[in-house]
Amino acid sequence: MMRVVLMIAAAFTLTGCNPKNEVASLFWPESPAPWETVDAYYYPDADRMWELERLEGFATVSACKVWAWDQAMVRGDTMMKRGAYECGFGAYGYLGLKPIYRVVTQ
Image 1 (spheres, rainbow, N blue to C red):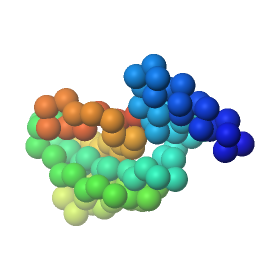
Image 2: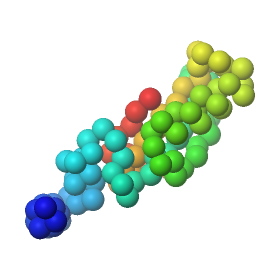
Image 3: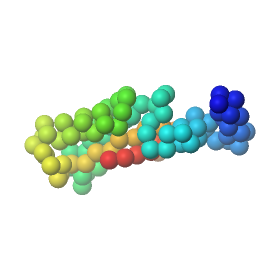
Image 4: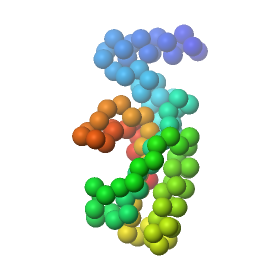
């Protein structure tokens, strides 16, 4: 199994792909790979997405979601009607100041 993973990683490297993200996408398409962490973005006002709170390093998407809902609760948005959130993992680049993730979920 390890030989197959190494061969796949070598192939992705030779083609210019990010082997860690490609392997993660292959084996963990909808969840973070064991070496990835989850970053949370909470937007108190969904119409003003440039105003946000960010916390990095969650082990799971569930923990990210709990944190985001806690942020909404603190602000009295108990049903998340004003705010919004995103949980992303597998960062591989930046668009301005915001990382680009392999997967972004709500």
